[in-house]
Image 1 (cartoon, chains in turn blue, brown):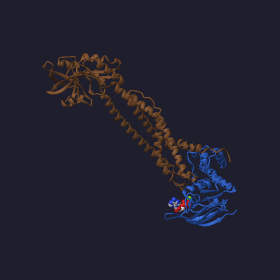
Image 2 (tube, rainbow over the protein chains, first blue to last red):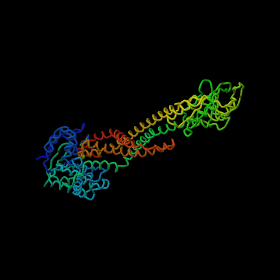
Image 3 (cartoon, rainbow over the protein chains, first blue to last red):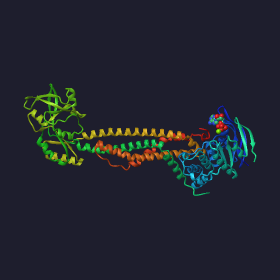
Image 4 (cartoon, rainbow over the protein chains, first blue to last red):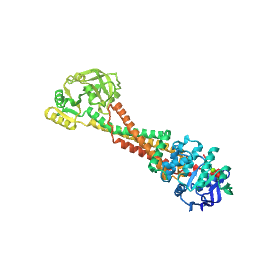
Length: 221
Length: 383
Ligand SMILES: Nc1ncnc2c1ncn2[C@@H]1O[C@H](COP(=O)(O)OP(=O)(O)O)[C@@H](O)[C@H]1O
Ligand SMILES: [Mg+2]
């Protein structure tokens, strides 16, 4: 069963065609990598799948529902309920502790639960950093908090835009291990990356060029 | 599921307070603005309501509120009759009692009105007189009304000659020194004030008065009773209650209150502008955070609630500070300017708090609305 289906998606910014006639199907539990040169439309695609932007043309079927015509308000609801987002810049709320940053996601979703948030932090190896502010955490630790936050509401789909782009090798390894674990648990992962090592871990790699799908490469198992 | 879910309000409270406490340098500016606004508000409102009451007491206890004039026509008021009338006023209630005798005299062949009186008593019955120079200390020195001084070009220290005819139709001439120039805003400015004994010396007789002004600190009923007693018991004196000072008190206070009111409104407007500007900057520098919250699934309503929560917190805290500082401010002014202490009005706490919160909320409205326009997609774009 497909959790995501993009049908003939285009996105046009003024005269810039960021995406053109994209067709893609992602099945439940799949780990997909998206690669491509800078400006090829990777982030635009993540934005559309992540319900933060609407396509100019075409339709997006997410978890069986067509979301391409939804209002901004119901897109917010879909995003909150089904998607976990991880960004290249580790966006944390700078006046909240690591634990509170995770709890914010619970708060917007349903109910904040301190114990559960702490467990999520322990899972990414940061149980002892719960009370630290973002300024007291390294980049790798911040990114792990962001991952814990993305996972806290049990999303069906994890979207990560260059999650290891700003990390050193050690931290990249830690993050990749977490992704592998998530994949084993059956969570669908779409990760944008420049790094072939990261892409290799995925089951398929979609290569974008000039807003089009140049090729889809199945990886060896 | 692990653990007990925390109440949503608890988390909301935590987010709002953390934002304020951990980003204090920015919020301090807004807090200061609110606190200063609230201080001026509560301080001025205290003065607005308290000082007029105090000043009213002051006016009433010093201004002339009863005068004696001669009964019948043409006749003068004898000093003896005035003394007899004064016996009916409780000595403790008399603030001042100034006798006046008026005669026409000439300076440079121009006629002027001369008033013979007791300067020490005038100070008490007419505390609102403004004298440039000195009050006369001894015989031979006089107070000159502003109009007279302008007309014959006199300033303190000058000597001038008074001529005229006495009761026996013999002419007199005597030099006086100008001790001070008096401004009252009334007809007194056309007069020359000298000591009663000097005027009696010029005219050649004594014991005759035209009017006695009394300042009595007593209630209306006591005053009415005094008037009745004197009318019934003293021959040749007509006592009359006057309102002149109370009226001038009224206009002064109305003007003072209008001024205080105006200043309060201006300060509140300035506070609002300052808070609005700060919040505008706060929203602008937190666009990324707002985008992130939206990306995490925050509805516009949640974003608005969080900023509004911060605003209300600022308003409340600033208002509370303002109540305390405002009282200190009002007390300082009251003690220094009016030499009186004021009592604390408990009603000011809710009023100042409510106004501070309302003003802050109003100031935050625009910036917070603009916060909801932030596109969550900005968090994926690079810096
Ligand atoms: N909000 C926007 N307004 C205008 N142009 C945009 C906007 N977002 C992206 N673009 C353009 O769309 C193209 C694809 O951008 P993006 O998806 O960010 O590429 P990538 O993530 O692959 O580097 C680029 O040419 C970029 O300049
Ligand atoms: Mg990108």
